[in-house]
Every structure is written in structure tokens, then in C-alpha cells.
Image 1 (cartoon, rainbow, N blue to C red):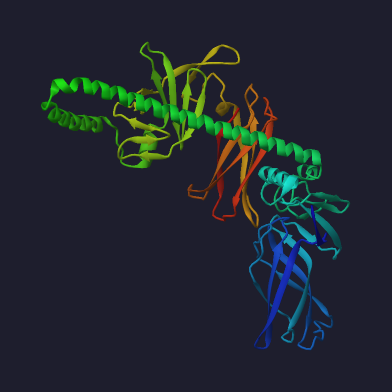
Image 2 (image 1 turned 90 degrees about the horizontal axis):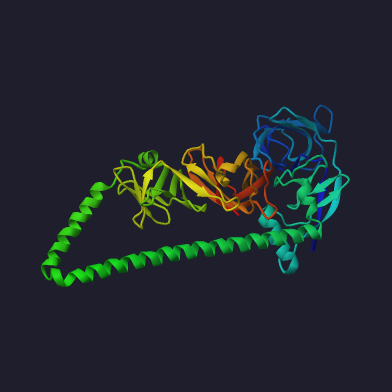
Length: 470
């Protein structure tokens, strides 16, 4: 590890105080800026100030070398630097100003008094980017965020987070990156770092396996489409000698009529919101004997494919083509005027319906429908997300929340996606993480998760969806 020296004031509530003084007629103006260290939103700051003239002589205010300088009506978020603040000084002779924190006031009404400077010299240990430490650093940043670069430390007067921020001993979470004190301090243990490396390796291996499964499924569908086209071509070739030259004209007419009939049978819509409002819901495909064999559930921007065998997979809805009546997932789903959906293989899905699903764990089946009252458990009915919040620090926009297992099964490697949105609901950025790893989430258990994207002040909310799980 690379040692880095750092001097910190353990009592400071603000840092990086800078100022310049400019004469303005018979008066003097001070332009002041500073950084709020993250204990709350600042609404007022009071400084202990000392003024000096151009020769460096003290300028006395009411017979004293020091005076109080108040700046109020502020709104400075945690870990944000103030804009340059203009203050009128009590004497026009002042050309140099020395400032020291005296009191701060926060938005919740809390007032804290600065007890005086108490500096500590710390030696931070920065993880190397290469070798064994580099692998540990990658695992740590994958789990806790890119801002983590140092080995955390605990002292009698406070603790230093992996991001490098000093925190008072009573703070359970870092005032900069928001990570928990208990989790950060464990990173100083080699055993914890080794376990993180192993967890990330397992997650990466699972991700690659799932990608390969998706690729194989896509290849199977592609091959099925080729076989279907081949069969159709063979049938056409058998008829071609009989029809002879006249068939060319007939084919052209049939193609035109077929295309017009196909378009006439499609449901088209006046707008994208209208299409979503009319098509969202559950559609069921039946065998020739009338048994439900598959379902498609359209909800928001996700299409869930369920099969009677018990398997289930989510796909992003890439487009709502309202003018042609097509919902584009990994395939084209055509909306018909009779309310049905037809997939690329020609299977017809009728609106609503129920489906019995086989259970690999118990050997029994349970009924399933598109309504919220399903009698069988899936990860989508078992897991719930709460306390989803968006915060901003100096480098990142962070989404945190809690996932709880309300079901009866244990779920592992639950991969979730966060869509970071502005006030109008437009998605500005996305991130992925494992809300649950190899340790699993048992019935009744809950766990917090965290995602982050580069800082964007326009982001106000984050919606969570489940991508995959074991």
C-alpha cells in the first residue's frame, strides 16, 4: 500500500475557507467561499474574523482585533462548495482578512459551535492498482463504489472511511460516501478483502454464464426461424411446377392481399401512451388441447415470459411501435384487433387467462394469472423494495434502498437495475448491482443495496427492477 500524509481538523464543520477583499468606495467587500463537510444542509455560518490594512497592521473593530462575521440565508448541501459569497466588512480600511469558523447553523435548526482547531496528522494507506491489492481494490469498488481507495482506520477521536473522509466517532455512516462504518472498518482485515474477491468472482462467473445462456437461446430461436423458412420454401417449390408462369402473377397478388390483410388485422394506436395503456397486462398461449403453456406479461418497459415448466425470464421492451402495432422485445410481438398478441413463431397469446406452473422443488403445480393475486411464489411477488432514496455527493449520484424477502424461498445472486430519472420521469442514467450475493436472502430477511452513477443534479428518483437471480 502507498502511504499518504494528511492533516485534518477533527472539530471542523466546514473546510477550504478562502477569501479576497476588494475596496468599494469608502467601504470594503469580502468575497468568501468554503466547503460544507457533510453534517447537514448549511443555512448560516458565523466566522471569527481579523482584519488588516495594506501594511499588515490590525484594523480594530470596537477596540478589538477580532470581530464576528455572519453570513446567513444559505442553502449549501452536504459535501458541496458554496458559491462565492459577498459580505460587507465593518471597516473600509481592511485589505486582508483571516477567517476561522465560529458557529454553523443547519436546516433542521441545529447550531454547533466550533471548539477550536485540533489538528491530527494521519497516514492514509492507499491500495495499489496492480497485483493482489489491485484485485482487492476492484472487488471493494465493485461492492462499495469507485470512491473507495484507502484502507479504513479507527482512532479514539474518530474514524477514516475508505473514501478518505474523516468522521467523528459517533457517526455510523460516512458523511461523504454514505457507506456504513462497520462495513468499512472490516475492509482493513485481509480475510474480508479475500471474501469480497471471491464474491465478485462468483458474481462475474454467474453473469458470464447467464450471458452465454441468453446467447444460446437467441441462437436456438434463430435456428428455429431458419428451419421454419426452409419448410415454407420447400412447400413453395413443390407447388411451383404446377402453377407455372401464371403463379408469378398470383403470388404477387396474394402477397399484396396478404400484406393488406395482415395490416388490416393489426391493432394500431394514436400514440405511445395509448398503446401502453391498452396493451399492458397478461396474455396466455394455449395448446391445441386448451392447456395454458406460456404467458407474456407487459408492464412498463418490461416483458416477462413465463412457461408452464416453471421457468421465467424478463426482457426489456425496446420499442412500442404504435403506428404498426408492434411491441419489440427480443422479438416482435404483433398486436391484433381481436386483442391477441402473436409472436415471431406464430403462437397466439390471448388476453388474461391462468396457467398451472410446475414446481421443481416440490413436484406440485399452482395456478398463475396475470393479476396481483397469484397463488404461487415468484421472485417478483416475494421481494419488495422500500426506502429507495437518491442523494448527491461531490462526485456521484447515489441510490440506496432496502430489499426484503416476503416469500418462503431463499434467493441468491439477485441482480437489479436502477433507472435514475428526473422529475418528469425521463431516464437519465442506469446502473446495475447485486442486491443479494452468494449469502442469499432467506424468508423474512432484508438487506440494503447501493448503486451510483456520475453526479447529475437533475436526477431526483430511481426506479428498481429485477434483472436476474438464482
